[in-house]
Length: 320
Image (cartoon, rainbow, N blue to C red; front, side, top):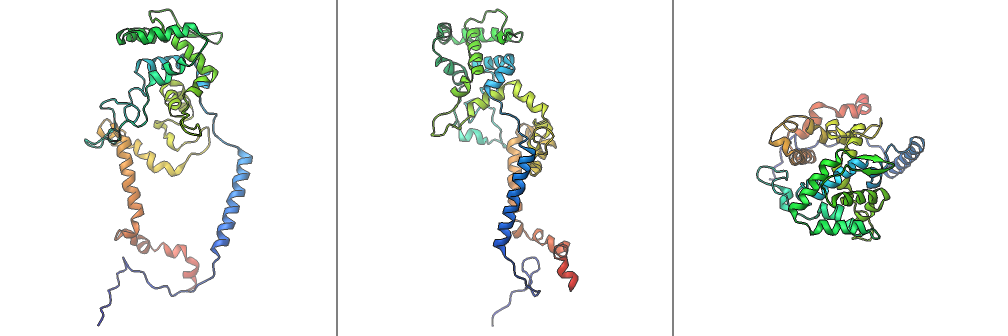
C-alpha cells in the first residue's frame, strides 16, 4: 500500500478550487508595450535629456588649463591616481582591495596595461610633427636619468601651482624644470585642439569605443570631481543614486549605495578601506538570498502568514 506524503503548509500548495477566468497574455503584453513606448516618447519630447555634456580632455583643458597641467605632470612623474592604482592597470604592490588575505584584483593581474607617462604624455606628443622645440624636449627628457627626470618634474610641480592663463595660453613661472615646461605646454595645446582625445582612443577594434585611457586621465584631475560635487554626484553625496541637476536619480540603486554610508563601511577600519570588495560580497549574498526565497523554509511562507494574498485578491475573497 502506497504511503501518502504528509501535507506541509510551508512546502506544499493547496489545490485551487476557486473560479477561473480567461486572460489574454499576448494582448496584455502588446498593450503595455505600446503604452510605455508612447509615454516614453512624449516625456522625452517634453522634458528632453537631463544629462550634461560629456567632459573630454578638450573641454577640460579649455576650461581649466592650470588643473590640466597640474594633473599632466603627475602622469609624467608617476604620482597620479592612475599610476598608483595597481591591477588591472599596472603592477603597484599593496594597493588592491582585499577580503582577508585575498585580493581579487591581484589574482586577475594586469590585463588592461596603462603606463600614464608613456600613454598619456610622451606617446601622444611623439606623434606631433612640425615642432622642433617639442622634439628636442622629448629627446632630452627621454635621454636623462630617472634622477634628473625626477628633479625636473618636481620643480615643475612646484612652479605650476602658481601658473596663470594669459590670452588663452598657460603661463608657468620660470624654474629649473628643463624640457618639462615645453612638454606639458605642448600637451595642453594638443588637448585643447582635441588631438589628445583622439590619441588616447583605443583603435584596436573595428569600432573605436574604448575610452579607458582618456577617462582615467580626466578622473585624475580636480576639474571633473569639482563638477561632480557641484551636481551632488560624489560618493559622499550618494552620487550613485543621483541624476544631474534637480532630476531624480535611480532609486533602485539605494540598496547598493546605502552600505557605503553606514558602519563598518564608512569608518576607519579594514572594511572601509576595502569597502568595494566587501559591499560587492554583501550584495551577492543578499541577491542570492532573494533568488533562493522559494527554497528557504519559513521565509517562503511569509506571504501565507501575513495573508497579503487576501489583499491582492480582495475581490475574490470579498465575494466568498
